[in-house]
Each structure stands twice: as C-alpha cells, then as structure tokens.
Length: 206
Figure (cartoon, rainbow, N blue to C red):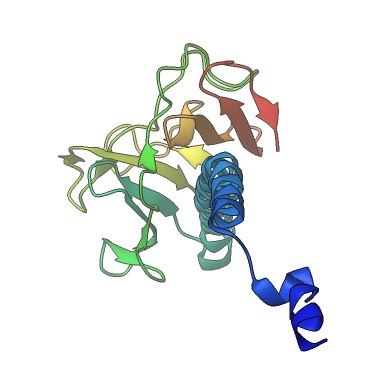
C-alpha cells in the first residue's frame, strides 16, 4: 500500500526536469533580446528630449531676464564641452555674469544637427547654430554659440559692432545621432521648439 502511494505522487513534488528549465531559460533569453534594445532606445529618447526641453526653457528665461533687468541676456553654449548657461549683462561693470548654474548635456547628446539639410520652416535661411559668443571686450569665443536678447526681448547681435542689430539666425540644435531637437528665435520674436528624425529631415513643431 505504501509502495502504491509513493508511485502515484503528484507531478509537482518532483520539481522541474532539466529540459523544462532549459526551455524556460531560452524563452527568457528571447524575450530579453527583444525588450532590452527597445528599452535602451526609449531611455535615450527621453534623455535627449529632457536636454532639449531644458535648453528651450533657458532660452525663454533669457528673454524674460533681459526684460526684467532692462539689459541684455544670453544663452551661451560651449559646443565642445556640451554645456549651456544663462548670462546677463551687468551695465554697471560692463560684464557678462552667470545667472544660475552651468548645465551639461546627457551622455551621447551633443550640439549639432546630424547633417540635416534644412532648417525648420520659416526660421533660418540655412540650418546653423547661432553666432559665436563674445568676451566682455567683444572678442569672439571659439566653439561657442549664443542667443542674445535685448531689453525688449528681441534677438540681437553680441557685444561687438554693430551692437544691438536684430539677427534672424538665432538657433540651437542638439542631437543623439538619431533625433535632432532645435530651438529657434525669430525677429518677431517667437521662440519655437522643433524635432526631427535624422533620417527624415522633417521638422515637427513641439
């Protein structure tokens, strides 16, 4: 009788066979192979979008700072260091002063437009980063880009002759090699936020 009970034990008491364990591991591997690349792509997409929104917000803040301080304000991008910052012109000392902290782009995100051929519609004649920033004395600073606002919130040239002339080519672009985000400033002045896939060259207003 005892022999018969042992012979008819439930299947679950014996555990899994080696073949079953290997099948489950194989299935997990297949699912992981499909999910991990998609997750990485999503994280990368969120990262560049977050950077782009931060840059766009700082540019909008510069416009407000210029009006509030009745001076000039600018967003200065260091293209090599992959940083950007808000600066306000101190009329008493004739110097650009940092307003807030220096922000850095995320990993694998750089300033650039990944070879896109055309600027967003009704913005720049040709796609390009904004003109070079200048020192307090008016000398060009290599590997930089600046969007500068006067006290009326209009995009103007940096501190160099001709001072205060309106410019229509103000823009900053960042890319991760797949997507490109850009903020453009027209002489109207309108600050516009854009996105395009590198492969499409089709700008979409955000």
